[in-house]
Length: 487
Image (tube, rainbow, N blue to C red; front, side):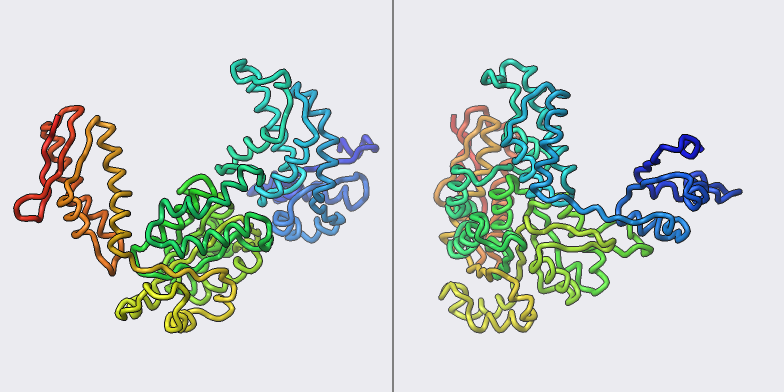
């Protein structure tokens, strides 16, 4: 009524899909949409509405009478250059509002970093939010004089934008500066410190990651797609965890999916969500929701050979195009993730032969036959590297023992105690924990059974004093370890 009487008013309704059903009651279906229809039909008011494609299909398109009274215009996302011009247009307003000075490089950083690290949002909104938050961060910093390093404390710099983005995404954000390039160049040595006895596997993965991070890989595919083949307990999962730590700043930046839980065709819904109208349609998919929450991560597909063929079809699109659509049609960006599949296909047969994994590091012909039997050619063709893991030697397990004992040493240091193992005690732990078939997994149980549990009992008895060195020796029966404190 107000708009019609004024005559010179354009009525703008944001989220216009909300008028459908607004004001509807049990006694009357006269909602806001039906109230507007007569005035729109007679041309008495001019109205512009804004909504998303999804809400348009769900609400507006379901009411043909309302739909035909509007002309639909698709507003495309602005390009990078257009977004930069939009930010320049907002620069003065943000500077006046926050009392800061926004450098020109900062505008470019806001656009470029938002494109790269915020794929689930759209320009220019995401770049403006990033810039606005960076301005707020600078203002907060200037209120703490001890953090001001120069007279240009009110300048909003690209590193301020990067810091905000790091807080939002949970990963260390930076361009490939000289320091970052040097860090990536050292990826092999960093991974070798955590993954022992698998030098060839680490080298293969490191070289592939270097190619991707140097900008020479396909930008429309994930950072890496690997198939790890080898026996249990030889370091496949540990390499995935170490890669997550190195690339994304945390070992927790890993989405782990047990593919044995996706052995039926209907379990595809657990990956991408159930279609609208089906049970649990609102819950989302484990893969799509996981990537949407944390697009920069390592996706570990454990025991991939146990998944149903329909599940492999889902990953064909992910590995080839770097994206996936959930059950509601929403696209999820997978270009910034590393996909690692693990399998022990054929390892039992290989372990029966003297050759095993101790021969040529390349894929053995009989091993390739096992892969071809389980996986379709189009799936294997999308895997960048098939990485073989050897059975661990006793020397490698010995190094892993030192690595795992380090955790126990650090916990004892917190109680001002030191642990010293005699050669015989160390050899007993290694002998009980060494298993050529199961790799290093029995080693942790051996440490727990022979060291951690009996030592915990002695600590609770109060037989050691702060500053003592606990000497671990083997009992007479050569089956247990005893402890003695030395001041």
